[in-house]
Length: 463
Image (cartoon, rainbow, N blue to C red; front, side, top):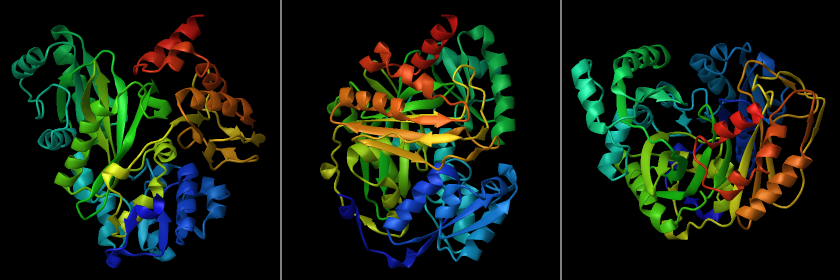
């Protein structure tokens, strides 16, 4: 199917070298996609990452600063200089760091290079939760009940809005994301204090005190819809994922498709997401995130980048999302029609984190032994190896174990075997915790909500 995804239409955006403005497993993943497409891959690295496997795998590497991300992976000027030195015609931001920075997207464009992702206008619009909600409403995407405008400063008006929505409500930072800048308000007694605290958090974290308010859903699941769009008005959605297994709003396990949701129910939602992309002129890959409760979907945000969990959609759709992302950035036109997108079987992804499985404290150090799992339908995306030094400066994600099976039951069994066959020594990881989770009857039954994992962990700590 991959050969049918895009065909050449616009050669003006063609490039032969991609600078990867990221690190770790996603940098290596993008390098491999470039190689398969006959493109050269250049990478940036910090001083802490000079000896990493992804650096050695690239055609060229440029060290742009010390270990601290603010002085390296978040340094726009240094990255643009590296791109020019490498001769790159495009910059791939991966995920995290500058991947959803409208300013960086614009800077790449102004420098005469292609940003492998949406343009600055789309990133800016979808990064503003109020503007994003208005765009979704215009396209017919279902949204969480609540006003489509910023909260005013007047306490009486705020109280009236909350009363009209009905308690409990949730207050969110308009420029927020990643689970930050949110506060649940159970009743009127704590409303004004919650607004004040959240407004200050939003100002410090996101540079704007703008807030909005929505109905708080007590037992939702986290469902995602993956989209792929070209720059010529064509868009498709590539099935759906369940990312409800979370701790402190951070995903731990993802799967595709979301269990227990019929296509007839989610199909219209996927089509509405595609229509929203057309309306805003969106280009590249993106993910619509929803809360799902009692048979209804509620839009919460759009991620304007490649997701950590994209492999589960690749495994079920048969589409190389990273290659497709690069091709539409080159100006190619989508050739696959929506009716030809088929999702087969079931896939799981486990995030392997360098952290203590009991306390969740980060674990840095040298990996003394690393053995990959084997077996049908097993894939591991990682940049680590024996002798690799896990740095304390970056996110704790060090590997992703992905499996695919003919159905959910087979996929779960393959993940159990893969986790059992994964050997990693020298540092603490969450592998033991994941092994136990995949034996849990409640998780195996499917359709767990976003609070399931934290409740499960709490029961284990009490026991």
